[in-house]
Image (cartoon, rainbow, N blue to C red; front, side, top):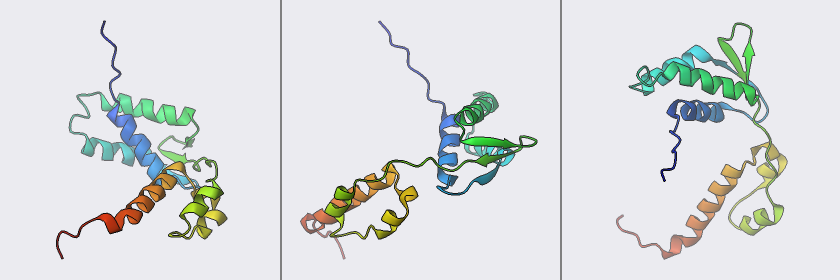
Length: 139
């Protein structure tokens, strides 16, 4: 009959996005959780109506359970833990794109080889390869 649709938790999505943005591959970052919640309240007009604090609390708990956040003493501050290392990129794939890109930095720093970055590089490479096919519209 009807399929149950899970409602997207916009608060958790924003918290995870923020944490992901500030995560560093080699260093922990200190985060004031009160500042983060204040920013969320400003971004989300219906924060109180949607019981935003409870959703925020659940998001922080989930991130702690996943060991992405570690509380510091009074729980006002948290360590944003080091970003987990992803698998290294395929060297053969890098060689295929090396006619346009210099991958020497990435080869020396495997911590900067997330899947998302590789996807952006491939998209940019495809865009660059097709540049001759595009027509200039204005100067």
